[in-house]
Length: 368
Image (cartoon, rainbow, N blue to C red):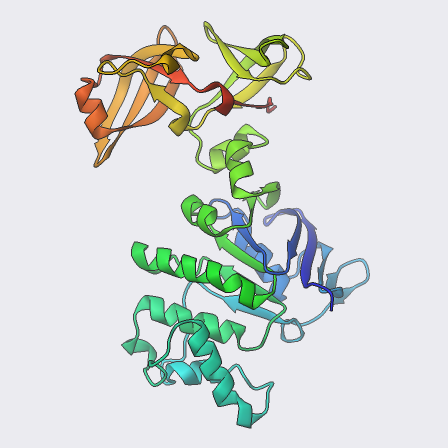
């Protein structure tokens, strides 16, 4: 039996633009990440048949669900989709087990109770079979809603911000449970969120979406360390996004030098970039290292940058610092452990020096 696989290419202009191309494999969790209104839910609704895009195709396990050119658009009822919404939509007059059982109409009555119990066990809800939704916590209700979505043995599972209505600790627990379930489910899973931390915890791959367009698809680590454009870098939460120009290449040292303001920054070797070419570049906040007055280190010689503390905001164990680079209107953001900030006498208006880690500077094609 071949692996389950979902493939889609969707195009549409107008008020709800779409330019999407995705392939999601069996057992893979693809996270659609983007701000509100970016088209994430429209993509899910298109897959489920609740929305008909202008053109494109959707193929699941080799079966065509939608193809505008061939005028194929099978109904929602004919598509084998499990859909888990942000709001649980459980029937209040039915028990937890009955809410699952109502989705088991496709199997013989004699097997429905056992199958409902199997699904209860799968989502760790043993012993709560006879409770009504109002007697369950938000996390428990979401587990029952997930079991009901799986009750029809779908070919694909769609999750539309399913954890946004629960508290932080419950969200972390549900994310972990879903990650553990993926091997059992053996189906493509598409998970929608605008929460970057959630996406990084759960995703095998992240698809960054904006204005209905696929901007980049890759693993969480590759997306974070290698955004294709400054737009992607901004959408995934990078603050330190700048423009510079290629100054020179040093083959012996295996470095490419970037001219930025009055600095010459060492970056990873990229000899294919032309000398003088303008590029966008990014460095994650965690890869900007404070020059500590109490304990200087050798790392201070790596891309040192100096400035004035423009913003100093203690946030519990960490302090957010914004640096106005000396003599310029450019700002670097970093986080410093609060005890380190105190020990080094950091405060708004004070001098500060930092190093930008060479290997973590990422160069991108300059956006138009």
